[in-house]
Length: 398
Image 1 (tube, rainbow, N blue to C red):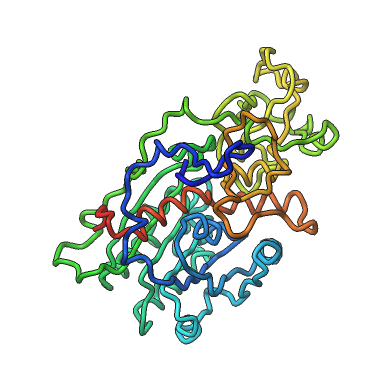
Image 2 (cartoon, rainbow, N blue to C red):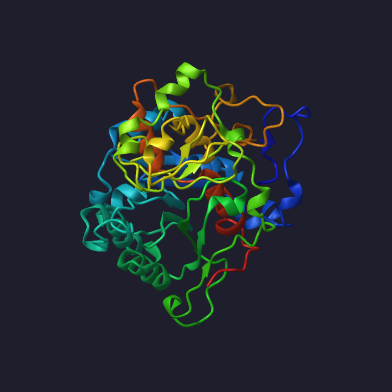
């Protein structure tokens, strides 16, 4: 975990957590990154990039956020008191972008054109049009952004959309760094492998070298922190919401969801285990194949048989609640909602975020799961912003 995040229920409110996990970095003293950042947040969703920027510790302001989803926009406004711009990103013009005088773009474009289980239409998918429009706008700007950060699903790294973006950035003199990493590598017990691009204008003109795509490199380990073994991850019980039996029953997996999947091996995890699978936008619905883990709450010693799904029915299987998923995604959830065990190792991200996170009451349970499934891991992005994108002492750029 990042130095500076406090554990909940800490007796010493000034204590820092796991500082020994943090490799020495000069990013806090780097004069070049102390400029005031003016940020445009594209495809903002429920504000994952905004929270990540706050958690990175950098100084700056999100001057505008963009999204057209009514439900996520209501959540964004609920937490930040900012109403996202609902102009379709596909139709944004140069003049509009320039009016914000932004020097940093953060974005998490729609992943559906690139997902392994989708149609893989890539740049021919209408949902890729927003990203492609931003790529086309970049060279037309009088003052292009100094910093650009992109998050997307694994498989984006082999897409035509990514190739177009990289070529444009390369032509404009940006230096780039690409990561393929997952939250477990950052101390969080949730597997959510994602692609991340950090691109920035160099302090000095780039030396003449070959095209970036000819020597591209994907970093598959965060080399700015010490390696975290899976055995060191906190148990899932530390991320568990403090629910009564009645409240917990709202998240029970209906028997019919289990019985109709004969011989399917569900991802069932116990509270004392320290890893769960990726939550997708279909989590919490009848789409139970590959959408996320079930939490077992009863009969932990029982042996069950996937060939006989009836043996699963008395395990107390439930979905992780939206608040639990949000915390596993490192959103700064208010801790009165969560497990108050004095031994909990779940970090309190609200201590390093200007804004806390909660869902508006008008947002349904399914809408909450969908928004989280389309979101990102805030802590992972915050670490990459701080130690890679905004850190000119980091030389892992091409």
